[in-house]
Length: 294
Ligand code: GRF
Image (cartoon, rainbow, N blue to C red):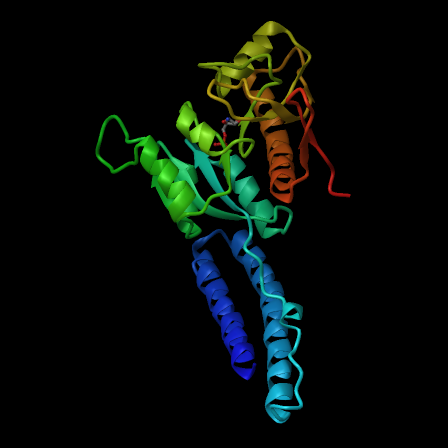
């Protein structure tokens, strides 16, 4: 019995080490991220130390008692950090949505960790940010122009599922179509954000400024981001969440883009938090319902 308690204590210590090695890479992040990480580190460290103290107390009570006297401690009482849901974030550009999701994780609003960042553009801002934060990066698909290494679809599925144990895929400004085998690997577990109110202003070729130009040209008075599940087509998966912003008749596409992007950074972290918390249910007709945390 004593042996099993000691083994457990070692496990707690080992988990502290894992925790430290994970976060020790973060100081290369922005100052804000560093401060946020230190806050989280302190909080989690306190929890882990509490675990060790609890485990040590149990240990000494067993050591000080005789073999015949001591009754087995309830090991279930010793809490150890649980494995958080793992995300892979796909980016092609500046990665502002990825940064918003990362910030929400650091603030404790999304209870998950980012296991990998995937991109078709290895030099893009999103990849650079991931590297600065010590998050593993993968290139997918293999760039047509060559020059750097990349993965094919079978390899990316394998890397996400097996190597990085990814539970959810989050497309954040990723411009390539996701092939059916990758979609099938993440049923109801892959999200995208689109900068228009779907099902309008979506589809192949409708991304970035093109969406906002079409919005301004159409004369609509409202637009906004849509978060949706990913299927085999561009922007046709089930809509999960939307935000609405006004479009003024004097607006340029840039004005609209800035207004929409602000709301993207609000609605996407909220939707990802709901996904990893299990706060999404499905109607019989395939429409998702996102429930608030309160
Ligand atoms: C965003 O408008 C997003 O909706 C679209 O790509 C744009 C850029 O995203 N999918 P980001 O700044 O790289 O996150």
